[in-house]
Amino acid sequence: MKLLPKNRKAEAELNLTPLIDIVFLLLIFFMVSTRFDSNPRRDIDVPVSSYSESKTKNNVSIFVDINNIVTIKQKVFHVDKHDEIKRELDELKSLGLTNVTVVADSRVNYQTFISIMESLASAGINRVSFSVERSN
Image 1 (tube, rainbow, N blue to C red):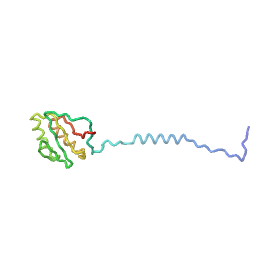
Image 2 (image 1 turned 45 degrees about the vertical axis):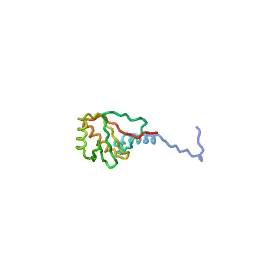
Image 3 (image 1 turned 90 degrees about the horizontal axis):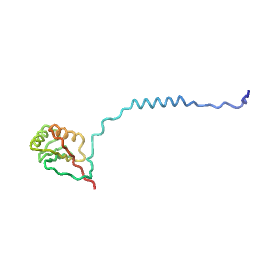
Image 4 (image 1 turned 90 degrees about the vertical axis):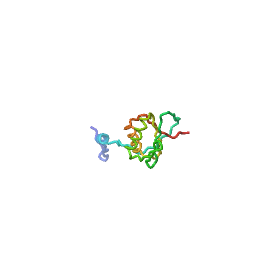
């Protein structure tokens, strides 16, 4: 039997197995308890496109400025006046309107686009395009 000298001390060991178990448990806990934001930002920028605009006969442009003023065929509405906008769109639809182009300021917020799209949907207009700035 081999004996260790008395002046030599035994080396200390660090067992990492429990530490790794705890790290994995924390990782699983944070993965399960994390919630992702399902509501993205409401502001959008009007995109830039390299395609040219196609003209059609029954096309009407809806202009929206930064103050939420909507202009349809020289008639001016505020974006909150859903009934008046829908009435105007219903009248244009009865006259044979098939396509609508929305031309808006790039700083108009997302809710304004939603309001315009709701008015178009309630009037039964489903061919909608958005005007974008042409890139060079």
